[in-house]
Figure (tube, helix red, strand yellow):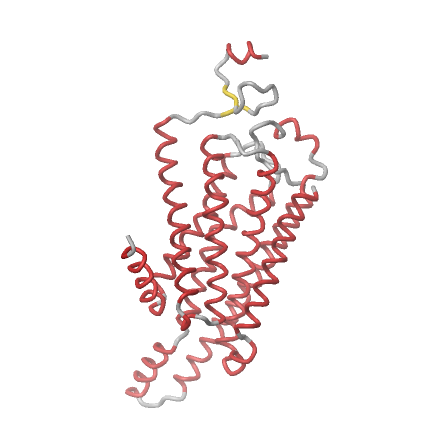
Length: 329
């Protein structure tokens, strides 16, 4: 076996093991720019969401139900960037997993948990915006800090149960024994999914919440347009009409539009990966899933940029925290 390995140009993750996976060696001209690109995405994700977390946690005026949901989403994105993305970068570019089978399961479970938390957080944000726009008189009585915190904790617990329960129970790999010879080798971190688990995870962790979010935002859009038409219909004179339009634009819920952008970017980044998993849960080609996975991870780095450019009440505290940190150095 050792002699056959020496004679050909095939490379293995573990050259001394007979059960090692084959390794695809990218040239330096390809691998170096990719390490730089993925490294920049990781740095942007980690430090961007860290600043969001510190800013909201530090300033008491930002302790509102909406911002608690943004904080939960920022913590999720931070953990994704700090815990999940670095090992994924090495696996994607080296095409080998060097951290062992147990950490592979933990890594996959945590990844599933965090992606589930993200979509649940966005669902909660949609509910928050729905009440703020469609039922403003009941918003402060029904959406409180205590209620929001409790629901966030439930979502994190439910996501952990789904992520770790599915992987460590083996539910995801029932009926995939025929693929074990191809994927079960040393240096591989591919957790196989059968058709049942791929449908279950895609429907429960993405499709149903995504449809729920889209329906809520369509309802918000209809109510906002109805409110605008109602205001305009009550104004007779052109002068008052222009004045009323100006007042309406000033009071238009900008947070709803901004968080709607966050939701839209999330769905655009994650939908291709879930659709790929749903269509072909056991794919012999790993290049497309890897590309779609990093497109999904990129969403976590985009969110802080959206907050920084959209929330005027967030930019000032953000700058203060940023300057304080760099004054320490």
